[in-house]
Length: 460
Image: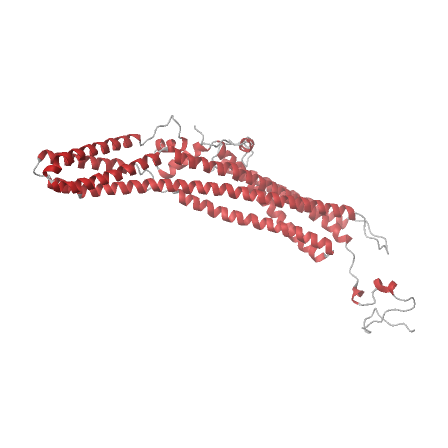
């Protein structure tokens, strides 16, 4: 089968397509794209389930670490005021988690942009193909109506004017038959008319799904950015309530990251199977949805020399009929106008109608060639199988880095909590010990609140 111009399966498509697949019973499944088969659906679900397994292992690891840290610490000696060791390790762990999280955010924004660009290219190609098909239908309808009007008015008037000359009436009737034959041949060129599948509707559905996908990933990226900000604020201000907020958000974003990772992995694997050999699946699906013949679909989807234009015979017959009508009208103009001057007006109108019909016919020949629609098909495949697939892989890396950064942060938070200094309840008194060295040796600061239990005056 011929490949669309400019599209070749990428190395990522080949690599993902070669990955082994198995159903729920761990039996091998062929890598051909078959989304309606149960075994293939199970294989993709099993790929997504691997992310669920990773989430479970991450939560178990974090829980075990937190239990060990909280329950297995050696007791501190009484009166010890020095902070527990490990502050440097906590600091570097938090810094590493923040750096990995920031790198993941950057990669996520790039992957989201690439995926959006690929889907936009797919939608644009579908809209352009819909415009081409609509133009074909419009030209055919306009031309057939114009020829029908010419048969009902000008040719009928011409026959009435020339009724005294039998041979001239026969020539006019021959032109009528040729005109009706051209109209009949042109009706068969509107091959997409009445087809239930509309590229415009497909483009709208794709844009609808992409809009919600884009919003979901932007929200996920913003949540991770908020986690990074809360982490920085919590460590800088040594605020325990900020650490609690950050813990809850980190756990939520960790679950969302693993969930998005499973969805992205399954989508990337399925997309690689489709992109490795898209022609067969697209031909079968389009034929099933539209009911068009395989000759027409093969011509436009493959567009190679081995497949001939299925409308070539109709185009040839229409061109010959138009040439014959021209000759007949020129003969009538030479012979009938000198004898019947009133025949000149319908003949001139018929010539004008014929010129418009020939112009529309040449446009139809250009639109019915496979180059235009095949170019749209190739652009759609490049957008879906190159940009969108590459963006999905970057989003997969973003989810993986996010999960690693969040797991590291969650394991570092208890140690950071332990390093925070306790709050001094007497700090509200202006006679804080922090200012005592700044006063004379035998003087203590006056306390404005005599009733505060920690403050009292000494006699002079």
